[in-house]
Amino acid sequence: LMIHSSHDENLSTTQNLVILIADDHALVRGGLALVVAMASPDCKVLEANSYDQVVDILSNEPDIDLMMLDLMMPGMEAHRSLSSIRQRWPDVPIIVVSVRDDIDSIRTAMATGVSGYIPKSLPPNVTLSAIKLILEGGIYVPPHVLNFDNNVATSIPDTQKISFTELTRRQQDVLKLMQSGLSNQNIGDELGLTLPTVKMHVSALFKKLGVKNRTEAVAFYAKHPDDDVYT
Image: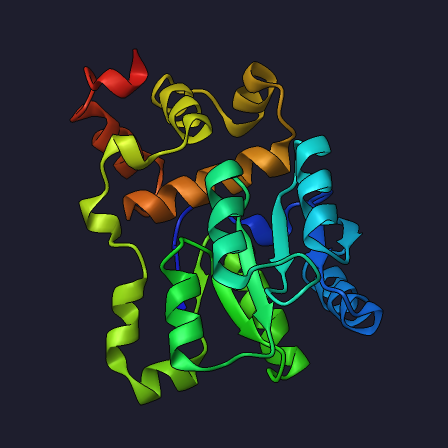
């Protein structure tokens, strides 16, 4: 299932993204790094081979734009560790990369709010398309899951029922500045973020709000100007 986000902030043309690849097999990390380089040629790739290394890198690298995460590394407690990472670093988009391709594993992972689930059995060209889609703000779910059980789509958060309390603090900041008419570059200057990072936040914000462009996002904000999340 490829869920597209048709907005005017396309990340496929961005440069200098910082992408963390976390897997305990060097061969897998190397293969993913090659695919990532095709999706974003000028990206910087960081690598981790354990849960502790993931936590260390996320704690010390504030500008991770995307993480590809294996759930079976040393120190990982599968979905429990995934949920912990999501809670501590909610601004970091995550693609789960796993040997597990069963329905329950995928549904459980998607329910945590990750941006995609890529089984390791997926062909490289499909993996590349999935990564590009996610960098553009979309969500990727393996098609075989929907062929087996159409209800898997219910694991994906309902963007039409989003409330401001579900936005991260960084997404709130970006939306407020967007409402003020600032460009992505000016938002980055204001918040001390790189342009690719701002675009990643904008894409995640559009996806979470279920909107296609800045106009719709600002209109959504206008309906909640006095929400206490902004005070």
